[in-house]
Image 1 (cartoon, one colour):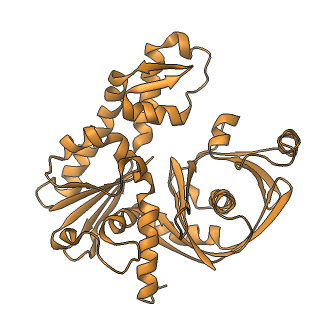
Image 2 (tube, rainbow, N blue to C red; image 1 turned 60 degrees about the horizontal axis):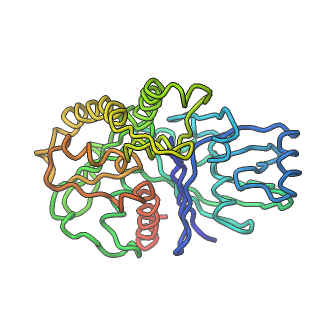
Image 3 (tube, rainbow, N blue to C red; image 1 turned 30 degrees about the vertical axis):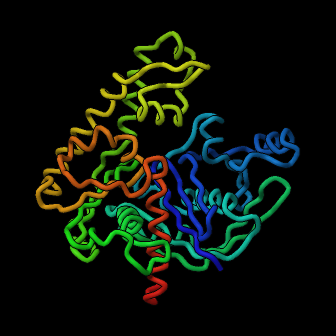
Length: 344
């Protein structure tokens, strides 16, 4: 039996298993298909469809990047995600990306601190058997055990612990009080950590501000300033919008379009709301010896977010290019720590 660490975020779904190559990430997007649509995909791919197309317990779906390209998709946010007809679809999409055969797994799943009341719903949605038909192959997975952790704790553990989960990687964090800020798709999460690495749940909050706000504003502004090239496009490719927001350049149609002004305008509202919450919820920079940034939104906003926080010791939970994976990487370290302490 192996463990799967899953972070079903509002923008990107992330999964990790033990091993060097055991990581995947794909877009949070689901679309139910008809039998006819699914049959056409199977026929055209000669029984070997892209990973996003599969059946879960007989119902055909397209999930992830393929769903975004297929057309209109379903995106639930917050507690509405933790149902058997929704969460289990992302779980299934993760399982067939991670494993080449059916098996029994243990699930260690993350959620925002504000969703703690729904952790039982999350686990119920995941536990049990999942029959997945992928092309001409069929897999039977069983989730025999499920547990959860707060998303910012994953980012914290990714910085604090070594890969074995048994020793400290950054001892200086243990000597002061730290604030973990996790900028996600629909929420920004805040978590306090006392000296020694003990989580202080007196400050474990989720606020409804996320990078999706900036993505929508960027698309609106970019369309207004580039009417000719966007006139016949129903929606801009989400992955290219995310890259444009971070880099200030939109790549499309074989051309690079400067969009630094649109990026700045799109992030300004979000940054102002984060700054206000930082003062009102966390008390500003003075109470903290360290600030740890995690979540995919932190990498997109990093250059603009650092001046807002006005702190001299800001740490990223991972390399900027892979910070969206920090919570699942840290989640696996936390799982190994729990194993050692017999807490599972």
